[in-house]
Image (tube, rainbow, N blue to C red; front, side, top):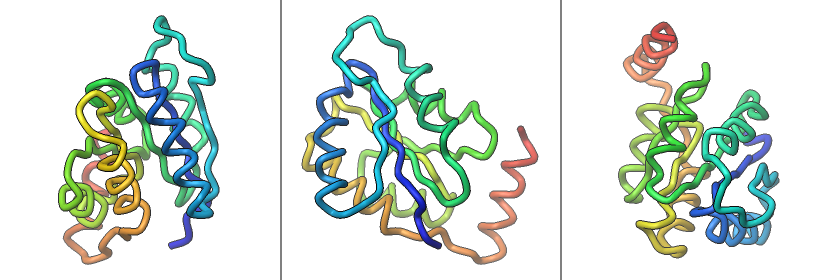
Length: 147
C-alpha cells in the first residue's frame, strides 16, 4: 500500500507540536499537508481542524490530528465515514491499531506526550501496514456497516 499523502492538523493546544511534526515528516521525505491551524489562536475549535484533515483524505492517505488530550480530535475524526481514528500513547498500541484495526488517522494528546514520543508514534503509524487476514478485514467491514 502506497501512502499518497499525510494530512495533519491541530488546535491551539497541539499547534506547536504539529509544526514540529511537519518538519519531522518533511525531513523524512513524506508528502505532508498542513491543514491548520495556521497561526496560534486560543479560540479555535478542534472539530473544524479535524474536519479539514479528514475531508481531504482519499484512498491510502493518512491523517494526524492533535489537541490537548487527543480525545476531542479522536471523537471528531471518527464521526466521518471511512475514518478509523485511534488515540495513540504507546508505540505497541499504535502498531496494533494500525495492523488490527487499520486506523487511518492518528490522534495525539499534545499536553500528555513529549515531541520525541509523538515522533515515534507517527513513525510507527506511517510505517505499519494493516493486516489483511480475514478476521481483520471482516471486523473492518462490520465497523463500516455501523455508520
